[in-house]
Every structure is written in C-alpha cells, then in structure tokens.
Length: 270
Image (cartoon, rainbow, N blue to C red; front, side, top):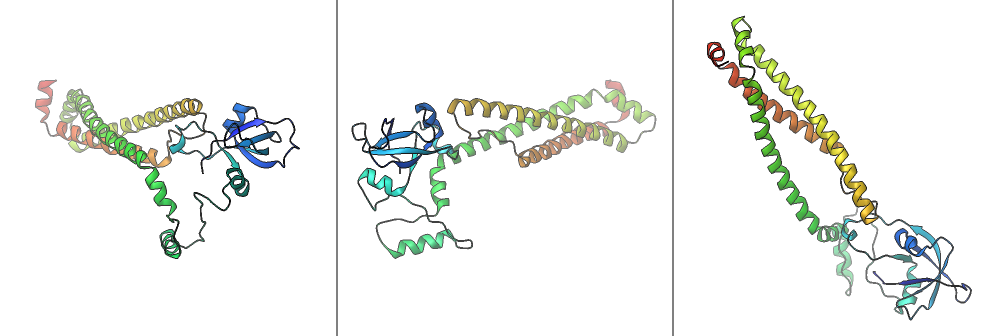
C-alpha cells in the first residue's frame, strides 16, 4: 500500500503511545532522522494524530520499476497502519509464502475458487506485467546487438582481407621455397586467432570500465544501489567465444583466398 505520510519531529514523545516505524534511508537523510527520534505521523499535514519512534533506518531493495519515482516510504506494523487510516481489517495487497514443491499457479487457482472479493495471482505473473517496459527495452537492445555483431563481422572480414593482401609477397616467397599451402593457411589462421584473443581481452576491459562508470554516475544521480550495467561471466564467455568464431572465420576465408592463388600471380601483383 502506498501512503503519503508527513513526518515531523515532536518535542514530547510521551503525549501519545509511540509506535515503532522503519524509515527509508533517503527519507531519513532528507529529514535528518536517526534511530530513536520521535516523530508525528498522519495521512495529511493537519491530521498528525499518531506519535511514532524511528526503530530502524532501512535500505529498500533496488527496484528498476521505481527508480523514477521520487516518493519516499516508511514501514509500519499493519495494525498501526490500519488505525492510522481508520480502516481496520482491510488491506489492498498481501503476499502468501508457499512451501517448497507447491506450484504457485495451482495455489492461486485454489484460492480464487475458495472465496470472492480478492484475486490471487502468482508473483511471476505480476512481475511479468510490471516489467513490460523493460522487456521492450531488452528486445530493442537485442536488435541493436545483432546489428552491431553483423556490422562488426563485415568490418572484421574486410580488415582480415586487407591484412592478408599485405602478405601476398611473403606467401609467394614461401610457396617458391617449398612451404606447403596447408602450413601457410595454418599460420595465417593462428595470426587471426591471436588478433581475436587480443581484441576480446581489450573489449572485456573496456566493457568493465564503461559499466563501472555507468553505475557510478547513475547510482549517484538516483541515490540508489541499483546496478545499471552488469558484466557477468556468461556475457564475457559468450563475447569471447563469438569473437574467436568471427575472427577464425574471417581469417580462414582470407587465408583460403590467398593460398588458392598461384604463387606467380602473387609475385606479379606484389
């Protein structure tokens, strides 16, 4: 339940029975509240009818869906909240914890058949509906990633072809002295693999630095511990494997094109 509350320090905490509340870290910082401070709580500025005492200052779990919201929150015991609102035995939403092995879908179906006046839904379904915006952004990023990989593969192939073209004279000399085409092909392929490994290492370091800079900037901007950029071992492994695959493919194509050319042709064009 979202509730707009006004919290003000009170001079005499003994006027009313003080209820324990937990205050969000950002709100506590703005109001200068600490554990043990006395406050007045109410649904509006002219109705501060409940006294409270700060029992804890907590850091809320990072939530991408609430990063743009500027509202601050406190946590109260449910009976105290019901008394404050004047609506006892009434809630908007509550969670049910299931034992291991119980399917959330079947539990929700049984609860919905048991009575009227509420709607039970699995938490995964609620999370999926609230994350539609992030799914669209994720698909957009995936499309950008595919386009970038394709463009990078074409660029890498062009670079390898130009690199191999510079080795035409060397390849012709090696063919004249009796070096087999298979050996020349393997040497060029090994060179392409080394270039791909070096490029992968540079890309991983660059991604880590960019991710750290992104997190430092946006965490400071929104005053949150939410991680905006994450470089996981899975992402690193996939990127390195893709880089090696593309590098070896481009190197093999360029090397095969070179070794199939007769040595006299290579020498004449050098």
